[in-house]
Length: 342
Image (cartoon, rainbow, N blue to C red):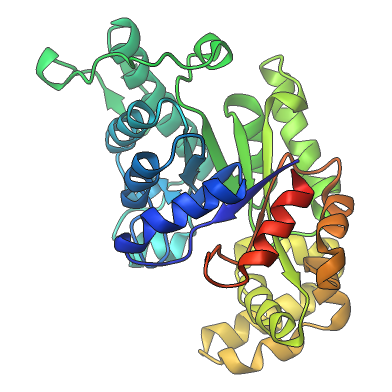
């Protein structure tokens, strides 16, 4: 199990120092997010200021972008870093796509994301091998690539496995429900587990869905890297923070199946009603200790590494803490955690 780090929501000027520290401490990858900032801009700085560290977007909102934009950006970052970039995509939810990005929500999110990935790889195949660009689907018709706009082949060839799949740059997709998990198993290199998860939900719902998808393309579960983000709490303050975040995620209707599995549908409905009214302060109180322990690893600091490994053994290939990596805060704690994973 590889230990990764999450870039905090910070300005670009802070990224080089954070990236250098993450590589020096021994994390395998550093992930950016699309929350308060663009997820791709820090990646160029991470590539420039590190030599071994993998890095990627967890996530970039796919439905807010053209697959052509995604193809060009990922190609440039892969070229700059010598193949260390991972393109992590997520659909977001309908309200954000329509009301924050001003885009149309597709009738079939899974089908549109599939087409986006297929178009991206069609661009890459064209640039790497000179294949004619000719993609025709329900959501995209992409047929034009003149020499002036051709990015050309990667000078550092991708791994043989990626070349064999025609992938060139690894693509991970994120999700909560089975549709996207199946799609990851079928055509992607990895699945980014949403922070709103429990080990039981991953074992009983997500992993079987990934395996179902992998069988369609004669792949094995081991061919898809499962990257999990984990809530952890070693202090009362961290427990309170986790309750607040869990209550926020649990209020999202499209994430309801996680709560349903555990028999907490009524609580989820109540949380949704509070969220609709903007009653955020009332929500964390509905997250019981039982719920907290399902969604968050509550343990002593000295036992954290061992408990994380035990909790996600056989589930995750990569593990990132929900807590962002800030080098000057708890430096020795981060070093100790990375060393125990290494």
